[in-house]
Image 1 (cartoon, rainbow, N blue to C red):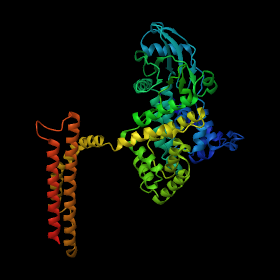
Image 2 (cartoon, rainbow, N blue to C red):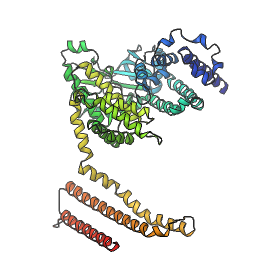
Image 3 (cartoon, one colour):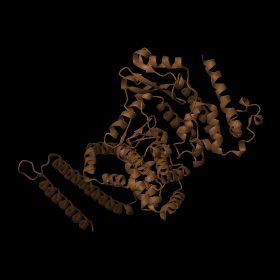
Image 4 (cartoon, rainbow, N blue to C red):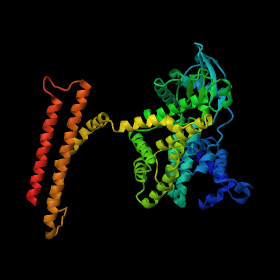
Length: 558
């Protein structure tokens, strides 16, 4: 079994090597010392290969290697932080259309997954799919209650095939990092691992069903937008059953015009939905291209395909808000600070060069009217700068950049005069206000109180350990006599400042807790005593006493 598996792997390695050579990357095969897999190196090369761009040649390689690599290329096209713009553009042209698999395999998979005969589950089931892709295909069917549904069926053995391909690709990346400097600089194994994780996540249709249900809850708070109803009873890891819907694709401008739809209104509605998902919910559609959005007769938008989604934590939304604010204020320092908070900045980053690149980016937008600035383009420009300085931006933010860029492309095609900032401004103001909401800050401080007290309780233990180490002679402190008095004076002042800071922190936590408690209970008194007023008075007296003691201490030192 192991021998046969190894033989299959060698055949796959040979296919990869041949694809590299055919498309003008024979030097990689040479540098990896894999020439024995392709003995006639030059004869395998396409005659016109050098007339094509690097991106086009990479696209041809992925299409030649099959579904796993095509899907990897499509996922990589959403990562402008990893790849140059020309390669991203070429990868976006990858075709994910493959012939459908046999109808007897469809029946076998559906019956195995749902645990019953096909005719017992569905009243009618069209064995010829109306859509087919590398991972699965979609069939129209009818439930026994007459409901029209679309059933997505995963290809047979596709998970096994992709896991095998990804395993070999990981080995290929490890070999490349050992022998090629550029592969080490790009941390190729990390990139392959991250892309593979995203691809394997798309193989779980039950996760896609959960995503759809979450988007359905979001849409309840929005007007004229919804997702097709899901049928959990008929959903598994390899089967996804949802309401069958029809409509006009956003890319069918002629169809929209003939149906009497106002394209500016549709653009506004679509942009509002995406911005609400991104900036308010923090959970958004990762691939909102025109084929995944339908417009029905009444103007309602239908969102489709939830295999690729993005998530933004509260902290990441905050960093993104500060990044937008810094861009708007033309603050290079603010942009660099935001990038540092969002990504992983290497220790050896050239701060001067980074600031120079950010200044250049700022100058690009400083004279441009706000209505003409494209959010997606600006974010991707930042990712380009980050990539040039080997700053790793989290995948959640690169997914955000791709989503914004796709959304802007869709609305601009619908209405060339459309200004995304007019729609985004209310969401930006709301997000900015949330960052400085006193109640929100107070609740965060209350959540941090246990950690604060944990820190205080750990101080005696830490001091005891330090004293023990001093007694054992394991810690040596050498201070020359002339410097001793000055050192102790500075240490005393530092201790005073630390004490003052701790008291102020306790004062802030106390007052915020009292305010939040009173706002929740709609009372400002406890029985007949004004708790907030008394607490404020006591805390102010305590702080004044502390300030007086510190002033007296400083005078005595002088």
